[in-house]
Image (tube, helix red, strand yellow):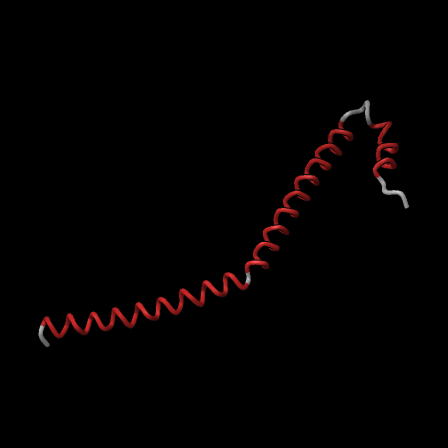
Length: 87
């Protein structure tokens, strides 16, 4: 096999692979666009979860402060009842 024949063969193989890459890329783009709404919803869920965890951290931290502070301890039952939702 000569260098010229090898070069032509490599160019043909490169063209075939380029076509495959183009097909895969277009299918991937279509799938990403088709599922974009799911992605956005998932990101919103993560944001909401993060916010809930931050709020829980504040509540737990404040709860520890109430338990440690002897001045606030007598007021604890009133604080708890104030935080309970009305039924």
